[in-house]
Structures are given as structure tokens and as C-alpha cells.
Image (tube, rainbow, N blue to C red; front, top):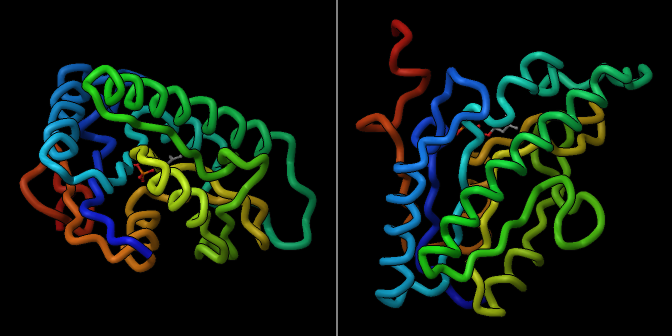
Length: 202
Ligand code: IPE
């Protein structure tokens, strides 16, 4: 498989005001897109962008406990289904805005979602929250065709608990294993990588 130059993670907290429902930090999105455009323009053509959800998706997911899914063997509640629908609507709004800015900045960006990809249904799946099937072929096809795939933290269909939340960081872990990029760059609103939110004690 041809090497990937770079995977860029745009953190949800950097792109959005995390405590205000569906509120974009437009300036931050512009800056991040300009940076990806610069990388791409400098010859890093095989580049993958992954972004978080921030205030798009987290509220809906929390309200409907989408991350917990449904207990094995029990019927999926209409409330959980609605939560998954609302969470997806919200994260796909953000990915539209991010991809729009990337394209305006000159990056040939194409958005790929986890639940419903370019192919009709769910090529990324989890089993008890662990990725058991990853849509690598779609990402590879998009890259090989000369486009920059844009993926994002998303809901995934789970073989045991109906659904769960798949974070952008987990997606990156899988992509890094499969594509062995020369580097992975994390753009965040904090100066480092933390094991829990840096404003929380410990
Ligand atoms: C969460 O994705 C996806 C949801 C549907 C809630 P991430 O975990 O990658 O998002 P951030 O970076 O923490 O906002």
C-alpha cells in the first residue's frame, strides 16, 4: 500500500465552543484548513484529516446515552435510536462545515462518515466498543483517487450493544496501524496530550 504522508487530527474542542451547542469556532476552522492546504501544497498529497465532534454530537450522545448502547439481548429503545439519529445529524453538520472550509482553502477534501460511508451502510463496526471492522478500503480508494479523506468521531453500529461512540482518536489509531503514516499531527486547544480533561483535577 502506498505510504501516507500525514494524518491530521483536528480536535473537537479546538474547532468548536465545547460547552455551547453546535457552536463553531469559525476562525479556528479557517486556520486549521489553511494549515492542511499548506501541507498539501507542499507535496504531502497523501494526507488524511480526522476531526472530533466538540459541541456537535456530544450533547445529543450524552442526553440519549448513545455510548452505552443497549444491553445485549434486549430490544433497542426508540429513545436510543433517536439519540443515534440526532447525534449523527449533528456530527455530519460539523463535518460538512469543516470539509467546506477545506475545499474553499484549496484542499480536495471528501468527507467519509463512519456509520454510512460512500458505500450504503456501515463499513466501520464495533463489538463492545472495539473496532471489529474498519472501512479501510474506502479511505484507500479516496486517497488513491487523489482526494483527502475527512473522517470524524461518530456513532458506530455495534454487533453486541447496537451502537456506541467511536472517537476520532480511535479511528486514528486504526488508520495509523493500516497506513503507517510518516507522522500524525494533533491540533488541539491545549498544550499537550492529557489522560483526562485538563481542567479537571488529577
Ligand atoms: C466524538 O468524537 C463523536 C461523537 C459522536 C460524540 P471525538 O471523541 O473524536 O470528539 P472530540 O474531539 O472529543 O470532541
